[in-house]
Image (cartoon, rainbow, N blue to C red; front, side, top):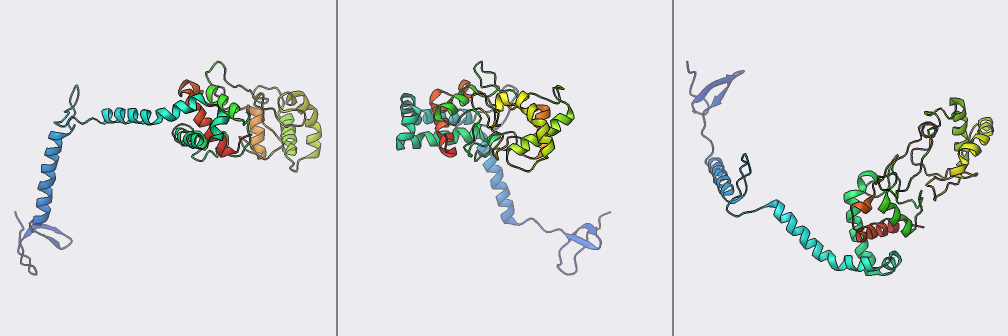
Length: 288
């Protein structure tokens, strides 16, 4: 049975619905709201007719205007290539040093390099190139493989431990995982590495680890732990650490021998783009 009644205060009939003594008035929708609603329906129908809208089994309705986001992107990319064509030609015929010495050419290279870096490199190295644990900081002028323009360009082209046959490659042994050293020896070696960076360490452990370091580590890191850019061995005497500077991180690296991978961008970008990216990275880090 309907429980519709006339509200004593407003004089409007109720819908018969009631919640905790509160009755719902049967007021009509505002006329302005109805007109907006009807206008939205008309606009939707017009859009369906003019623009791509309805999916089908083997395609979609293309609309009377024949609009296509895919075609628009292709057109915009073609226009971008045309705009960049003149600058790219100049990059192609200039050396890296000439690019940095020419303000106009350098400005163009930096603009292109920044765009490419943001789209492809920032995922690992961060938007500002400051890196993170396991990812190199590209702004501190500390380089595993050299920081000259030519070094940076070559690293970009072939990558690090990538699938390129000429990739830069270094291998930190997993002294613990592969049972090359015992756990106590790795503890001592951790203290030795800590001491190399000028921090307080267990003197007895350092003395025990000294011959182990010379036998196992100095071939890459050098007798004084200064590293070697020719083989991608880091300097152990500075304050820059790829996997962390605390004792647990150092011990973990000695034990597991971690090594990251950098793609070989030479397979993806043309030489002009690689040049622009090298100039951008070199300029932002100071470079060697």
